[in-house]
Structures are given as C-alpha cells and as structure tokens.
Image 1: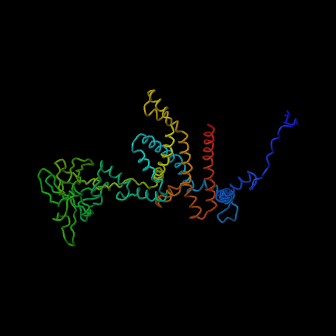
Image 2: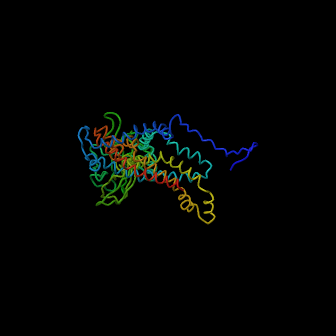
Length: 450
C-alpha cells in the first residue's frame, strides 16, 4: 500500500531497521559458561575424579605398586577375616543406625510440635551436631567405661540393679590359716558336723577394714545354749605385728554383719540364719548333726554393670553414640517437613474420628515420606564411611570386633602397608554408595516432576 504526500508523490511503507550483530567481548554463551565452570571442573577433577581413577588403577597392583596383581586385592575383600568382619558390621550400621536415628528424629519432631518449650528441646537434641566425631568418641569412651565410678552408663545400670539385688559386702573373704572351713561350690563348709550346745567359730580374712559394712560392730564370742547351736563369724585380723589370737575373737576385730549361715545334711539345707551386727548367730536343734556352710551368695563379686565395650556389645554401643549425634539432624529436617504439612488434612482426619495414633500413622507419616526418604538416604551414605567413632570408642582389645570398612581401609593403607588392598576397599565403598546416590537422584527427579 502507498500513501500520498503533500506534493502528490507516492511513498513506500517504512522498512524496519535491521539490528546490528555485535559479538560479546567474551565470545559466545557456551564459552562464557565454560569459563565460569572451568575452576569448578578443575577442582572436581583434582579432588574427585583423579583420586577415584588412581584408586581404581592402584587396586589392581600389589603392595609395592610395581607388579600387576589383577583381582587378587578384590579377592581379599571376601577372604580376609578382618575385612569380612568389617563388612558384616557395615551391614548392621546401614540397617540400624539410619533407622533408629530417623525414628527418634520423627518422634522428637512430632512430640515437640505442640509444647511451648519445643524449640529449647530441639536445640538441646541438635547440640551434639555442633561437636566433632572425635570429641563425641572421647565422651562416649568415658560414658561406656566399665568402672561404675567413672562410666555414666554403668553407674545408672548398677544403681538400678542394686536396687533389686544387693551385692555382697564380702567378695574377697576367705578362710585363713588353721581354719575349720574348706572351700566348696563357691562357698565354704565346716570340716566337722555340729551338735546342739556347741559353740562354733567361723573366722575369715581378706576384707579390708574400710570395706566392712557400716553396720558391722565389734565381734562377740559365742555363748553356749544347751538346746541350740551358737557361733560367731568375724574378720580374724588385728592390725599390728604379733597382736591378736589366731582363731580367737579379739576386742578390735569386727563381725561379719549379715553373713548367711546354712546347716546342711545330706546335701539339703535344714536350717539357716544371718549373723548379727557383731557376727554372732544361732541355729535351732534342726541343725544337730549338720555341717555349717557359708554359701557362695555371701562372696558374690559386686555387680559392675555391663561390658559395653566388650566383643558382643561394642558395635551396638558405637551405633548408640552415632544415633546420639545424628538424631538431632533427623529431627530438624523432619520438623521442617512437618511445618509444611497441610493442617486441614490433619484436622479432617480428627473430625472423621481418627485418634492421634491413627492420624500419625496414616496421615502424618505418609505426608512426610519424601522428607523421611531424604534423611534415611543421607544417613545411609554417612554410615558407610563412618570412621572416627569406631576408631576412638572401642578399646584395643575389642576394636577388631567393631571394625568397619572405613577403619579397615585406614589399617590396610597405613598400619599394614597394603595400599593395593586399601584401594580395593575404597573402590568397593564407592560401589556401595553409588546405588544409594542413584536412588536419591531418581527420587529427587520424581519430586521435581510433581
């Protein structure tokens, strides 16, 4: 279409200006992206790709690194006793540690949601994450100490135990020289039988004066009773060289307060009693013709609690320390996910008649499934490379029983000078982590599509 001007001259429509092509100073966009990614790629190659590649290559060589060993190093993963123990323990770690930590985190997050001091409680539970694994290992090495006077775990355990079953006060007591007692079945038995009207002395030694019961009084000599059997059991020891009469009750000696005495005929207990605070005791006529026995219960060693760091419990004990540290991490992530749960769904479930347990099990947990998956997968990857706690907490006598792959890698590479086997363990660990990482990536992609 043309238009007329004032002079009647036709003009054609205006042609739009063609934009000029100006090249970027730094080149194309791909070049710019490559330049920005280059530092990260260099670091990634130097710190991740090269070590992985070198470990794979090194795993096929012997300890010297000069001779090609083939798959011999990988065969050791399934034939070496130490590595097999480490592999079994790693399975226990992967199964139990993430599960228990996530479960505790879920419980803490749900229970503290409605309480006024929930934030303070979460802060306390999360505080262990602020300390290093090394510090946590030292703390729990003390917590699990066998001595109840040092270890908190055994102090509590012994306190509970002694509430229901009091330990003996005379674990070290035993007959002295020229004693009328002989050892029998963990206790002590008189050599001869006793009869009514007799007085019997049962001297013992071996208990330090400061270890005697608080109720113990000065020992008293037995007084004869025609229709009964009387006697005294006491600590036959007087301080000072040449002081005191052997087998006789001296003024400064103390009675075994609470000592149990039994009268035994033909292997059966016909009468029994306990010594008074001054060590004296009395048996009825039923004991006539019997032998007197101090049963083994009098000499039972004091209960020292559980051997937390022994061969059978060391791995669960170390896992407990790990859970103490990481339950707070799980709780914080789950609490964040819980804050995003629509309250309308929870209220609708309650209106429909669901109780709190049903709301938790059928509404809250399914809605938190993505968050729980993140926590579990993260902890699984973390426990596959756990090292610090296993290296610090178990004593040398039980460290082999608590061994894990990361610790065995350290041992083979540095303590035993087998870098080929250590590299094979490192590659094996990488292969164990890859499926978990792929699962996590696929799950994240599904979440993005939603």
